[in-house]
Length: 506
Image (cartoon, rainbow, N blue to C red; front, side):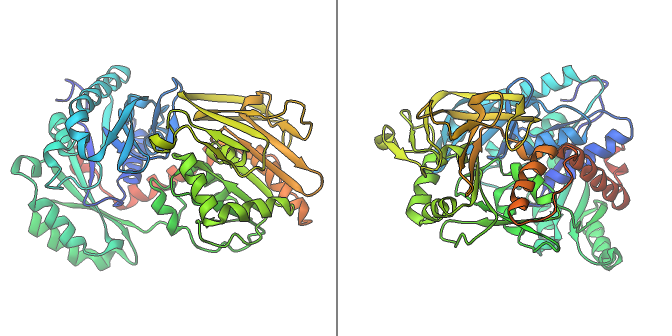
């Protein structure tokens, strides 16, 4: 069912999770946008703790926000009407059209949430088609479309493709190996009506000269009757990861790095795209540290957000990594926490309703924080979801933009503590505690704080000053400009190596 007069929707399916569907969808959006179309990204159901908050205060997956920017549009939660946010024990928070509507267990999800999910998916499509006249939906699938035990209950792959009569592109990752079996096996498990929707095959992440795959291309086309419309090369670019597992691939040493920042890879890490701007800094080396690893002596420690703040905090205590962070700070090290990371730096955290991952029998317990910021946090049912523009007071005065996405409300334990200062003109957004000349411990609720180029450079220069390094230029663009350039380079490669005409032909 596609609206009369509107271009036929396109859909990017994958032979597996991690095949590259998200980035290929973004590349397709940018290419169509360049050609004068209005591509509108859409993923019916996504499972991710890397979230974005749109202008209306709706929660959506960051990957669909990235695709919206690729399409030249503002992200809106209708582009990802069902978002599942894993929170451990086979449970997920369920977000429908930007709002939290409950918690689902894996074994009962489809029984309880299939019909409501399909309803909001259709509602999201309708909202987008009404908002963007003559637009073309660019759909992204999830995982594999042929998981035989899930196909009857799959909300976001073949059901959606058939509903919209989408022309589908099947993407496979040659880096994983077994590319021929992946494609042939996937097509073999499709029903005839579904197979007819596949208009092209795309080989992703190919290393070496493309002509080395010519024999493979000819074999696939002869065997399947479907054109191989492109062979995308391996791109040495730092694209935003969709899943925290992708962070494990970011292990390379950076030539010329002068500052090392240790980032705690929490078990329930969320909003890890907050760290992307630091990755792009040529003089900064990020080192992801897991509980059980040795913290060492970096120039700073960053504690990012968490979907299960209390559980991750308890894990830091049990593993000994929390003690290492405390010792690091007390010896003069800089520590910075974002959202849940800031909450962990406080003295106490109380979760009366079990919102942040404690079991019900322990939900009223007061969990001690790392005791590095004199803050007290209480988790409440209402979630703060809003974009913000404020003036930062620390490490220098500058305008910053970002968004809030949190349950907890944090407050200073002692309002008269002169060593604790708000970092922005809205004092509820974060604090810094100055430890004489030893260093700073600070935190903020503002996701995207590092995206702000001037703020980020002020913060890095504070670290550089301690090492007597030359300050970096403060005038620096917002990370959004770097993302735009990255999307352009992605689209350039896509246009060079992929022929989308079979997807556009009637």
